[in-house]
Length: 275
Image 1 (cartoon, rainbow, N blue to C red):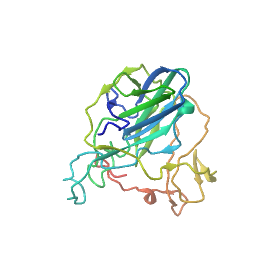
Image 2 (tube, rainbow, N blue to C red):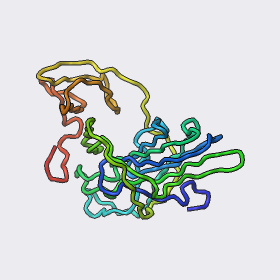
Image 3 (tube, helix red, strand yellow):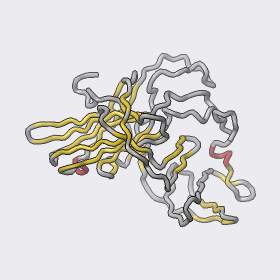
Image 4 (cartoon, helix red, strand yellow):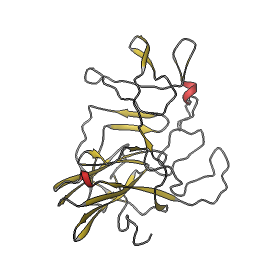
């Protein structure tokens, strides 16, 4: 790592105990900078915010890479290559988000491909068990620059995401309280080379309004009109403790129900139970 690397002297940090989607918090005081830049990454995915506002509209960051060594001997297909380990980091202009006075930087983490233990069609593919982040916020002034690096002084809280998996979805508990802030744990350096991310990111580009096909016994089937990659935005009314389940497919069965075979049913979980 060269001295010009934006993440030099920064440390990988993590929640102090297992958590499906921890929120790492760093509070800091500063004058209003002329410019501000945030370099950040996470294993697996991260979402960074300053004072509650997202630093980007990019999704599923960072892009997938061979993060580090893992056991390749039990994969469902042979892999005999010699691999280079690399972790991509992202850099954002956050000048408009940093205020004079007290500020709050948060980094929320998710499992992504890094911690993917459930779907086992390809064999054990996970890289690790501990979600972590590393970052540097650089503030520019007329006569100096200030760097705020991840160093272990941060705290973390649980989020309302109590489960997340790339293939099997997420569970959100909207009634869950975040709990007490706790000190983070400083992690060892990663073997992967930290490299600036290049290429076009995933982004939300438009909004579709799905059409209700039918409703019966509390079940509703909607049609987006085309095959897409996206997320659902919805508003519901309900009682405390009630739950809502969203499931997705690309086709319908002959009787008009969702055909889950078109969206990856039949996958084998870690438990050995097919889905």
